[in-house]
Length: 118
Length: 112
Image (cartoon, rainbow over all chains, first blue to last red):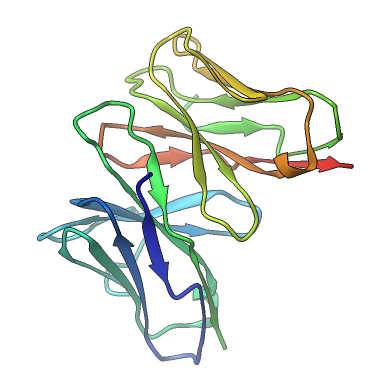
């Protein structure tokens, strides 16, 4: 099946620094990727839709200057958490769907990144 | 139903028990319903993709049904095993390649 790789799996950074998370589709081209954040005991909250070659679409309440998304190629999207604060500590996960021209296309997820800001 | 909702939030069963849980979703503008299994320290993996009212899908001991008119799907696990312990998520995508709305998940723990 299709594979999405996310890196790093864990990162600890100091307040004020920036952290970049990569999401790669390994065996298919993804014009669209999705970035989610998981809060404790809650499900996946969509942060933004990453569009290859154009600006990302952010969900309401998500600061685009805080969470920079770049989708420079059909296989790579990056999420940069800028000027990180302890409240940004969370689990971030990306996904992509491989439409293949069909309605029934599931999402393929990366492994997720546990970010801790100290 | 305005959002995707799952119940119960958590479930503890004994090995060998059969169990089921529910996903409710908006029935208007329905496109598809996905079920995922998310094991600890792993990526969520798709179990079922369901698109038609009355769909029933099965994978081993796990099966799912879909009612798009009333906006619900059931996931059944027959003869639960400890390896079934995971969080089960359902999601409703709004287009073929569009974003999905996820439920909060049902966390299943199967005790040996």
